[in-house]
Image 1 (tube, rainbow, N blue to C red):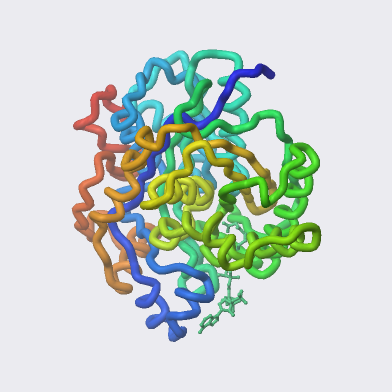
Image 2: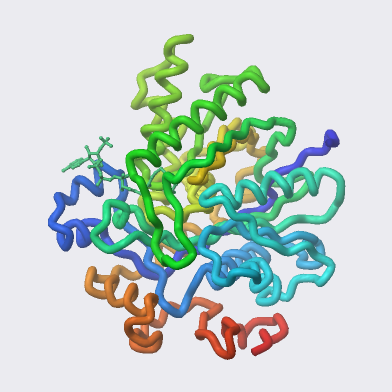
Length: 405
Ligand code: CAA
């Protein structure tokens, strides 16, 4: 451990080009739209077309990160992808991304998996690694959330990637590396057996596991730092669906209000958490990237300047593993405003119908050929299918060497 400041130096988001309105899904499922809009707090859901996958999303986010934030690729000495949407049993997504971006060979490259906690595992490892060297680490959360059609989890799907550069003297968010507010418990609240493409979930139990993990990590955080809710300016959570962040906040409020007087719940929730959730409401659950999507939302919220403010961040991965982090924003918001890519992606999106959503799922499941759907999404990297057991990506316009076939 050193006294060097470490944290997030740059952040970039990739959101697929298509979205479904939850109202259309509610109609198809014969459900009152307010169950999804109000009960779960969602609005739209990002839909991944069949010529994209978790690799292309990760590569898109990382490419934008390098270009918009002017990152020297040679400074990157570690790439960790946090994902629960692996595309191969042995070759990590990080390896594909390393190739697609043309990153240096002097580099550690691997994936970190523990459901939605994977990216946080990568981030905390990178913080320690960066504390003792001048190199940077690239951490990418990339996932596509898929549940069975007409299951309770279906309205909480989504897709997207968040890429972050971790370094010493970060320009965006300093993160305390001396706090160990972690929690683990072997539970089957949500998991995806290798033979399935959709998650198996015990919905109500998963909520209980999430809240237990929150209480435990928060208690550890308080003990180790001497801080509590009132000392924080913002509090961000893993967001499987936006209402979950409210439930989580309300649980901590209940605990804290026994010890001190607090402003009304609805006001303090909006100021500390609710203000950041608009992006999650647009995109849905992106599993390992959901917490960091809320962070991007906060950075890009008009009329909010988080510079020099403190933020608590709760990361939860089913199974389960969780951690409570403490960050402090740096002093110059011009460094990040308008640079996460979030607003650009959301403003260019195209709405699809429920029928198109079902067709995309069928193409993904191999029930109809990939090329049946010509969606023209304008993304840079394309997934082209599997030839001789190898996943093939089209990066013909990239400056990286061509991927071997
Ligand atoms: N108008 C307004 N609200 C309505 C409504 C209506 N017409 N009808 C229902 N509601 C409300 C309900 O009252 C309920 O609100 P509260 O939770 O505040 O009581 C809410 O809508 C949801 O209704 P149900 O409880 O009946 O919902 P459900 O049984 O259909 O499923 C769910 C909800 C369990 C969250 C399900 O969507 C699910 O399984 N999701 C996936 C699992 C998940 O996200 N778990 C979160 C913790 S685990 C985790 O965080 C990891 C991860 O990313 C998956």
